Image (tube, rainbow, N blue to C red; front, side, top):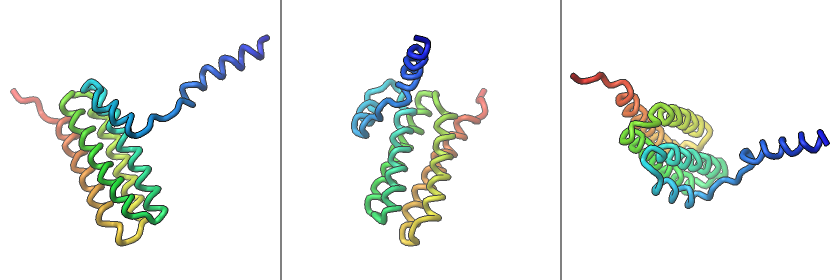
Length: 144
């Protein structure tokens, strides 16, 4: 009986970890309809997913798909930054996520074809600009 109880507890604990991932369009709809303070997390997740898609496309030699995914990474990152600034919430989490995505973009640039470097660098630069804006917001001096 004790073994069955242990197995049941283990199954219940593992359920959230095994939960299915929402399709991209559903996550986008959820982000657009979420309260402002929840939107940064959702848009960050969208950007991170599209970054994985871009990497997979570039790794497979599908540069056009990679560029399209990179444009979406930048668009979702912009929305994450904007909603974080407007809500005043999740600034630090968003900055950290943008830094990690920037690092992944640099790695992607190193491993990609030379012809693919300009769009990857442009996306990297844009994410760095968003990070800088977040850091400026986080550490701005209190005006009297």
